[in-house]
Length: 337
Image 1: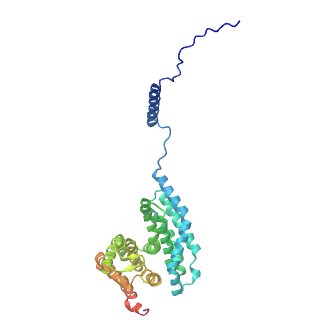
Image 2: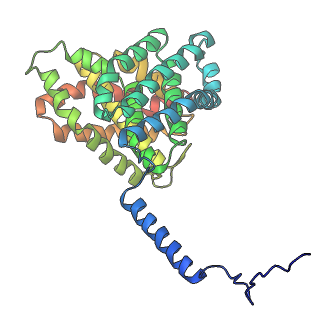
Image 3: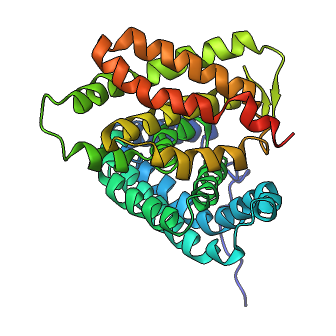
């Protein structure tokens, strides 16, 4: 016989969960404590790049873009100067794009590495000057006009490279690229080499030592006066007072000064006859630079030299300025009109 089980069953089962309010408070407190511990004792944080790491990253960007940019720069140079090659009867074989590109890679990689290692633009200019001088001498030995292609290839490479960067990075790199431009547009290394043959205290060396530190200021003053005299003139890249044309005009005013230094140091004007004048005749019409502007610039440079130098030093400079003025006289270009 089955006996009934005497089981005591509560009248109501307690099926409710534990006090949810208390649990929530406990969990919230635990989370808050964990958060505070994380803030004060972080397990890991993303590393903030150091300046040198940032510079290396920028250098890598430039290095990766150099090949494409170099091709673009050559296309731009050809677009501007292809007709001049024919007009000036320059033999096409003397313009070797592969040789020029090789030098572009070498020099710009040196600039990238200098920037990445924190070397100043001024130090880079000193370090790169001998190599840039060799490049310049190599191409001018073939045909002085070829340096026009070389310098433009380097110049546009620098311009396109700058376009790959953020504005703040652009300002950091521009001085490095300007140093390259200056040493290719101007016979700076040739001037340094010629100066090395003079003893301290010689008139020729004193002239250059006086003019060189003032050359940028002289160029800026000259360009300002040129802009005032020709306010409506439009060059290939824009108005004379636009930033890009002002910059290139200032460089040209510095370039003419450098050629005059070389004349003084070498005691002849062959560098002007063989290099500067043919380059100007080839490039200035392409960039819509009037000869009238060039002549006015020479007048202003003469005034600046007169104001800067002692009378005997100025007379020595004048012996080279006079033939330079004659070469750019209206009579010379009237024959080609």
